[in-house]
Image: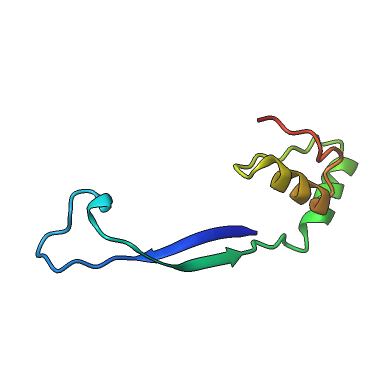
Length: 83
């Protein structure tokens, strides 16, 4: 799950400030978002392995998140992570 912080800001001038830090932000809350794995992915991964294709996953997720996703999609060694 990805957690996003949400805030809002407003201004009364005619020109936007040159940097966002000049605005006063008001924290609104947090949003949790899940990007589900497509139903076809585990089967596609298995078909690649059956065809002799080496499968790797490249992601910007945290290692623990990547490992969890790797297990869900059927990677042979989801515990292998390069930082």
